[in-house]
Amino acid sequence: MENFETIAIRTQMERSQYLEHSTPLYLTSSYIFEDAEDMRASFSEEKERNIYSRFTNPNTSEFVDKIAKMEGAETGYAFATGMAAVFSTLAALLNSGDHVVSARSVFGSTHGLFTKYFPKWNISHSYFNVNEVDKIEGLVKPETKILFAETPTNPGVDILDLERLGEIAKKHSLILIIDNCFATPYLQNPIKFGADLVIHSATKLIDGQGRVLGGVTVGNPELIREIYLFSRNTGPALSPFNAWVLSKSLETLAVRLDKHCENALKVAEFLENEPNAENVKYPFLKSHPQYEIAKKQMKLGGNIISFEIKGGIEAGRKFIDSVKLCSRSANLGDTRSIVTHPASTTHSKLSPEDQLEAGITPGLVRVSVGLEHVDDIIADLKQALG
Image 1 (cartoon, rainbow, N blue to C red):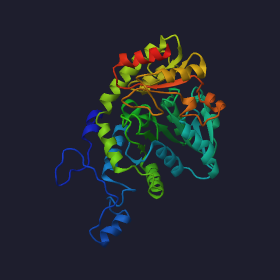
Image 2: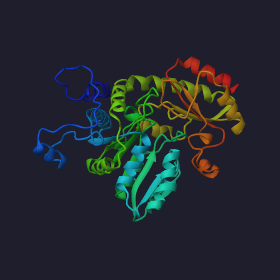
Image 3: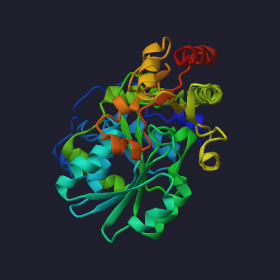
Image 4: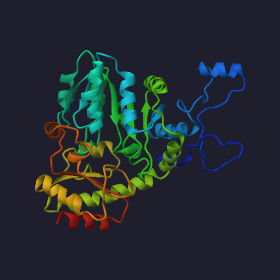
């Protein structure tokens, strides 16, 4: 199996004695052993088998196997949420005294890890702006261990050159970790460009219907081994039920993303010509500052658009209050179109100065374009902007 859609649909766990066509749910906390020797060999990892669902479960293993194959990775580990994946991945690999170089434009909670929690363990960070990749090498110190970035970024929809990041990481022997949430494995594969680890919030487009939480990290087996051991002890494991839902969701990821991207491009083109919208950003708009890079590393542009409403925060509030079809929510990647005001929601914990540094202006709006008929999405945005 080489084609994405076939991998998504046909990667399944072994059938049970009942020869079911669709993967069953394994709602069990633990597993039994044949005898004392089986138990000893299992716990000493001489055998590869399920012991306890905090460690592994058939449903979570199937989900991880699919994501790994889609990303071109060897293995991975699944988490209860996307932020559990981000925290556990970083915490497993960083020691006291280590340093991280990260893009400044990261999700608000990731910023919180770097600024509020990791300093407690003497882990420091340096930020670079998304348009200043050439300054990264100047930030690297002897104690720098990780280079971290999202692309496309949340919520500004900026694009970072994965190939360039891969070259820098290799030159300085850094672990390159890419949050690939906005693109999914269908649109972008950072490992091809030199990433060691790829993280997803599966809550978003991977689920695609706003139902369950989940996260996953895939990549280098030695690094995943460290992440697995850390997570086995700290307990952020994905539930079997959510893993089952997410694995089924992956079966339709390609067809959903094709439509999401088709709709989003049309909405972005509409917004570019809308007088009350400015600074419209969508990776596959030719006006996007990193359009050529996006075309190089992404299959399509994704479903997220950012733009600014003329009139600042009051105009932004009026717009959010005026939508009728679109949902007002902090989530994204749903079948339903969603509008979000990042300055007052997802990134509200950032100071006004940090918000501006991350490209978040008071009037910035993030649109997660759904699967409704595109004419209806545009009509709603048009009346709300009017």
